[in-house]
Image (cartoon, rainbow, N blue to C red; front, top):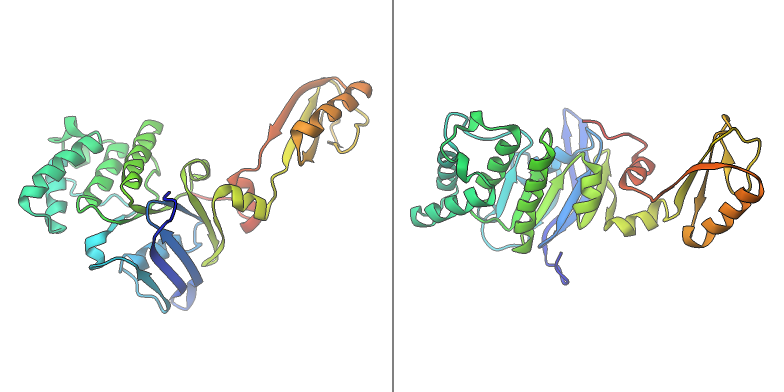
Length: 304
């Protein structure tokens, strides 16, 4: 993410309803140049409605969004829907050419950009294959490549890694890294919490049509669930008691507690267990994760 990020998109108090059922309820959000912003929420939270509205496929009932870029949205906006949007009976190269023409790219530039896209998506050896013959991961990569031939400044991605193998997922993020290096702002909806935690510059968690929290992961953790780590201890035989602050499970085989500073507190805790004669079989430290924070904020499991 850039040191002094430029705001390229602002959403203010957005409202959308379907048959009087609210999908967006006063949602506000900002997107900065060169950042990967992960938009997370349970099914029905309003993520796809927001993407559709930004793409011009659904008008807001109230509120507004503003693109802080010169020109028309079709010139600087790229959209990759959750559903594969390709011409199944055209080859990989033919799909790229067709989408490039739809985006108004001149024939001279289109030849160059198609070749670059084939290399970028690692599809050079499949350029003559029909889209319908590609694996799911290849189709996803082609889908993204077709959407960015016009070199958009903003890219909207709705669940781009759903249903793909780990190798294709890694390649997709390598493709996105290339776009980010050139200053493209990417708004990504995903159910892959670990991916979002590791890859996104900022995270926005939404539910019930609103943004609950947004910011870099470390800041969100400190602001919501705190940075304490969970200690889990497993014993080789049942215990009748353990030293504070450990809480013993009913089985007597496990105990847990939260430590604000494990490096300082853990040695004393282990000494206490040793003095108590507790035979520790296994000890685990767990840092706060995006899943912990998500459940804390929404009270729901993410569902596919």
